[in-house]
Amino acid sequence: MAKRWSSRGGPATCEACGAFSHVLASTSSGIWAAGVVILVVSLIGALGLHSSPFFFSGLVLAIACNLWAWKRAKLVPISKESAARATTANWFVTGIIVLFGLN
Image (tube, rainbow, N blue to C red; front, top):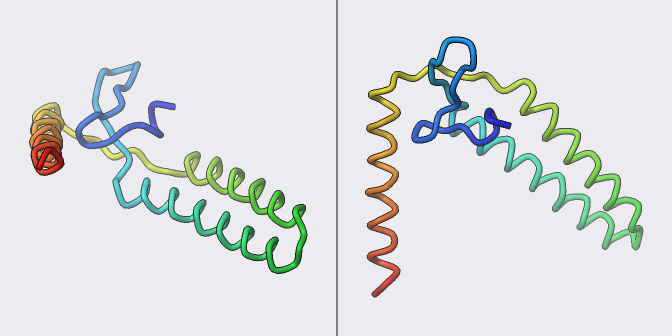
């Protein structure tokens, strides 16, 4: 599970050596996008064919694809300093978004 939630700002920690690593944002986003595309295509197909089993088969395919992709996702090492800078940048961007959201 740590692999799924890892990012530059919140890296996963190796239990053996204590080193930090994360899955690239592009990989994480691609896995998410593939699941959404599979679900949307299966929903459109199910509505067009009036077949609910078509949608449920797409749902099963999306889940299987997600599990397979996360199993194959590679962890990239990151230094403690880079992780700290990424965390600071994440909080800065979050603060800017909240500031604009208040207006």
